[in-house]
Length: 132
Image (tube, rainbow, N blue to C red; front, side, top):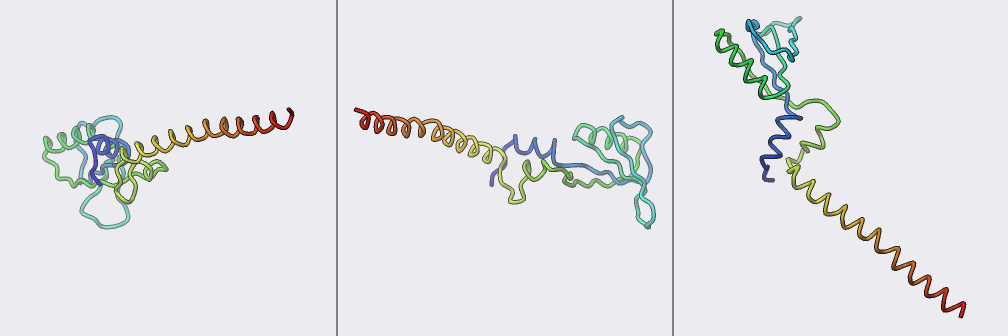
């Protein structure tokens, strides 16, 4: 299904988590980063820097390029209860889902509000006819 720019923004902001795998850290880095050391197994990378958003990712990659450090960028999905709602597995559009949920909720509320008045009027008329 076609993704809108709103869908892409929601995925970038709340679903994707960027990991930068590197040998050494740059001299200057933003404050809101998580840096993990890779230990125990032999790999080509020693640290993993987790960037929560695109702005931080651009700042870190610019710092690493400026310091001439090699790195590898990997993007993965976060692990939270909201991920399956914001980015469904069937690649459905969040905008499309929200639109149809609003339509169904409006129709359901309309039926729930109007139907009891119809039932009440019919029952009230029947009682009035019996009491006459």
